[in-house]
Image (tube, rainbow, N blue to C red; front, side, top):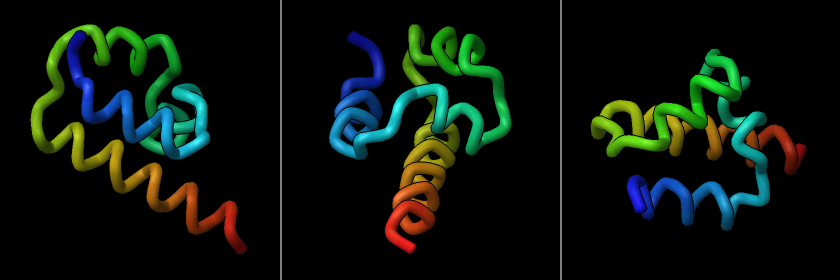
Amino acid sequence: MKNKEVRKFIKNSGFYQWQIAEAIGIHEVAFSRKMRHELKEMEKFQIFEAIEKLSKEKNK
């Protein structure tokens, strides 16, 4: 499975992929397609940042 660490982080975050896609500014279908192939480090970093931002907003 591609992007194991990203998928695990998403699952543990409690957010859905569509929420993360929206946070990084892409359509949920595009996000799903990106996840089929191993992401570049910069893309992974962008996803991790988006999840952290969503978590902070949720905890306000």
